[in-house]
Amino acid sequence: MKEAREKGEEIRRTVRNGDDPSELRKKRKIEIKKNVFNTFENIAREWLKKKRGSITPRHALCIMRRLEANIFLFLGSMPIKKITPRELLAVIRQIETRGAFETAHRMLQKRSRTDI
Image 1: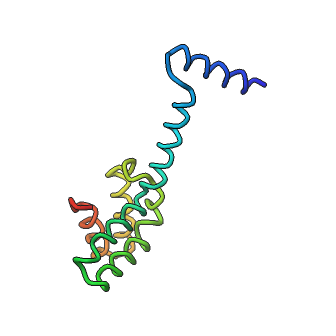
Image 2 (image 1 turned 60 degrees about the horizontal axis):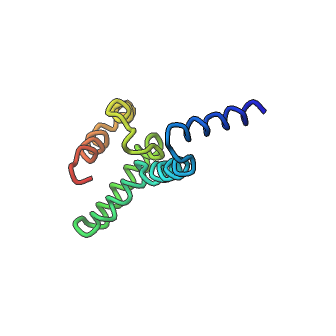
Image 3 (image 1 turned 180 degrees about the horizontal axis):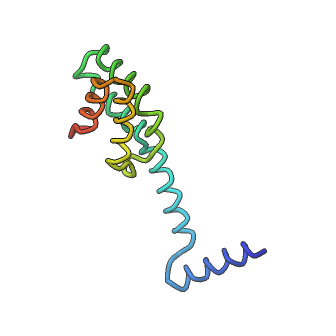
């Protein structure tokens, strides 16, 4: 009961402020869908599809394997705009901890590209 009253009060406040509650719900749904689609993994896969014409299939496969093995596990489901440099650096440091310095370097290099 308390939750329903609070929700009703929130809707009344929204209307008093001149906003349409149904429009706000629609905007929230759109924002949620954007965040689901704009994850690091989805953007990286889309980027790789675009690059397939300019790189060899073997190289594309190597890039995808590196991303799947090293990055997607930690950052793949995060909205790309919410990933901070600190979070990315933490993942790169984990790769370095395994002794995979070349992989860490390549992952950092791919992340800093301007066409991603």
